[in-house]
Amino acid sequence: MPTNCRGPPPPFPFPGREVKKTEKNRYIWYRGMKIPVTQKDYTDTMRPQWKEAKRRKVRVKRELSLDWLKERGCDIPMHGPLVHEIIEDKQLLDALLLALNRLNAKERGLIHALFYENKTERDIAADSGTSYQAVNRKKQRILSKLRQWLKNS
Image (tube, rainbow, N blue to C red):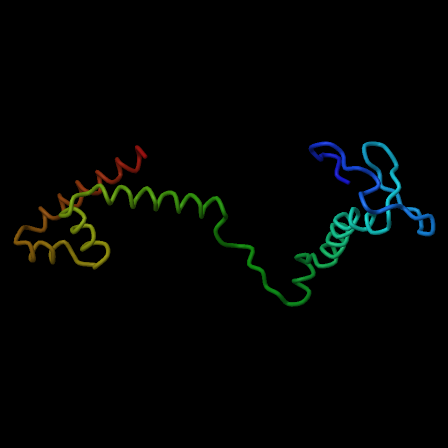
């Protein structure tokens, strides 16, 4: 029986089940006392412990080592991004998304055209009827804003 039970201890032997002398005597330890119980009560009490012991034994048999996998031809890449690098990239992307959402519609449209539609500054200038230098200055101001917001976040 677990020792961290709350409430009063259950009556022993369990109600309605008397320990028969013909059965093999079974005992469970409860708060330092050896208490005689029936076979059924003993089995019901010990079953969780037995299951856990079996689970641990089976788990040890099923564990695979890196060497065992390599011997069987499994190629496990040891290069690639580390977990903390992936987390840092995700945090940076989240911050960038928040910063992009702070831009007004015209600024977002310019960034989208330049970086997602792969338009040149000259194409955007021709579409909007401005010079490409004006488009370049707007782009630089927007990128400066984004850098500042990312630095402060």
